[in-house]
Image (cartoon, rainbow, N blue to C red; front, side, top):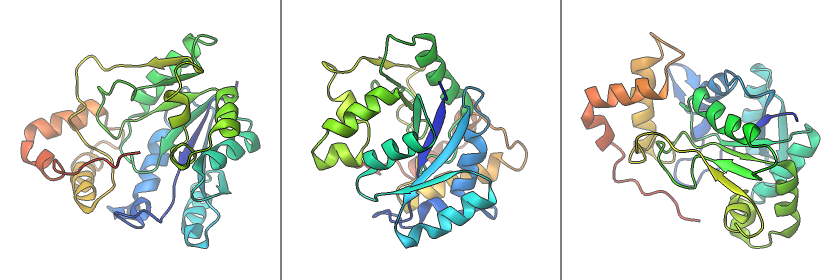
Length: 243
């Protein structure tokens, strides 16, 4: 097994173009995320999977500066991009992360990966999103290479090709699924970046926590939001895009 995190990233977001390269305290959001993901103890490698569109060249340049391997593949067929990246970097299992989660907690990644590894042979797919109890923005999915390959070969509809793991968790009759839950339901929180309001909240969180403690945790963010309850209202109205 080579436990490999593959972070999908592109600049062509419809609601907030270029979001992964937007800066807080002089650093792009993607740099914060890579920095945090690299601290996950269960990962053996971290890869960024971006598109073959030239507008994503800046992502490639940033990854080179950060010494992070990059794979470039289809923009719309993200499932193919993931499968090809997994083949290229011998990833098994694949830890799927998205670049709109810049404050993801490496300890959360470790919990989900540990559940998969501990139950090796029992699950094809483990995540903390099947039953959502973690804040949105802590999303972590672990899928075996075998299951990813099967999805790549069998999934035909555009939604399954775009959303990578949708074919897997929508077919519990074909794949063995596992979920990791948080002790308390914190699913009301939205710490992903898809709109200007999302960015404003993340900017406030990073500016508050990062200068004093670059290793801040999910619990640190929850504490700051308890101290500043009005911050959660910044993006409370934002609806997650549906598949």
